[in-house]
Image 1 (cartoon, rainbow, N blue to C red):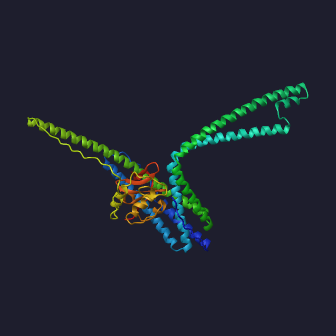
Image 2: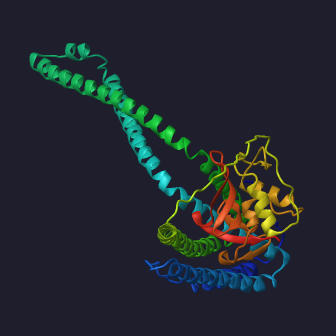
Length: 439
């Protein structure tokens, strides 16, 4: 996904701007660090209601974390308002830098498990390659040595003997030399075969991560471009970058921990509700069966029953889509669900022929006459931010490098990948960076 940055340069007081920039970073860092809380891991509860109470407590803590972060941002903004136009541009660039660093870090965390096997294969391949290079250098050194000594063949070595004793010594030397060269050649061939095997395996495994790595590469490329421009505009780059990384890491870890715990509780709630529902149905069936047996015993006469069946002829036709209608959250969610099953196309915006995650959100809202940003990064700060527990149908759920439309009850619809296309999913399947509302 292409992200656009606007970085302007002009004359300014470097010393004063650096001091104010450090004040902003300090305010944000202190505000975020003071919100870190140790949230208790949910424990087993007797009923789904108990689990929901635990989830509500966690969501309240997550909301407090978001509020504290927003407060820190507001405090930083008050300082930024006092700066010159260029100072405001530098602050804006720094905010974008923090967001990019957080996105890159989150994506790297999410593909770490998948990368583990590839790292093992890569290490084996690198080891084989290094061994190949070592053997090659040793053989080159041997050839160079023999050439410099004039000992280009084994026969010439023996023929150069000046006495029987010298001949015996050279014969032993030739025998050792031959055995050494033979072993080196065998080892070289073995390494070549081993390297080829690892290479094929490595390419196969890497093929599965192409889509994710393409998006990560784009994020990294944009981050590097931002850093390069930032170096030119701001003399205190190293200090500011360290602060930005610390802020991003702190905020990311807090959100990851809270989101993971909420997701864990969601799973427990679903399991407990399923268990309670099964028990309820079993009780109803038992009661129904007992009532039926009692009625049969009291009637004492044959009963007849008739059944009728009707069939509805099946029909197939080309899939049609309902119009967008009024711009409400429920209508937006219902409209988006019509396109489940349609293809994912990177960079696309067609709801029928193919779109990517932000293209899907963009086109769904466009159908209601609402213009939203075209990238997940821009969506992360657009509209009105709300806490996840306050999310309602039609809101946009934003993750690092991804986005989706919320359907309610913890469910989402999104353009997932080329393999799965547009599909349903659970909102907490990844770390949520923000929830945005446009209606």
